[in-house]
Image (cartoon, rainbow, N blue to C red; front, side, top):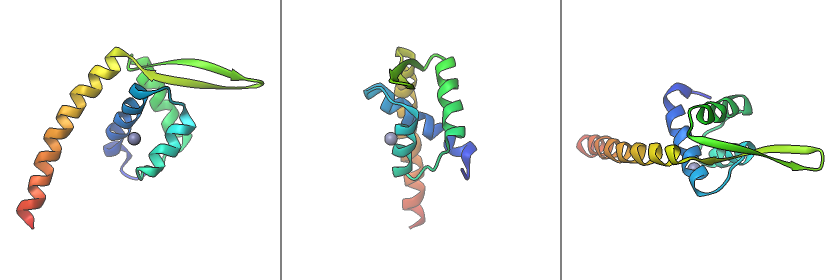
Length: 105
Ligand SMILES: [Zn+2]
């Protein structure tokens, strides 16, 4: 993905936002992010999910259906807390960034 380093934080926030609402799994998240204009491969998203889990923002459980299994993730209390902090900062940044646009118009 282009500009991955810059966009990675926003993608993590999408993940946390959705995982705070309901359980998510990798392919669902990849499809959802595609609607937002983020084209992620499993090779990019899965390590992100794993690191969010390692850092305590997500917990996972395994769901088995016949011979296939998938991992479902949801946000922890720490995840919700981090999301709330990030949203405040995002609102702050959006205000500043949009102000720049208005001044330039
Ligand atoms: Zn989203």
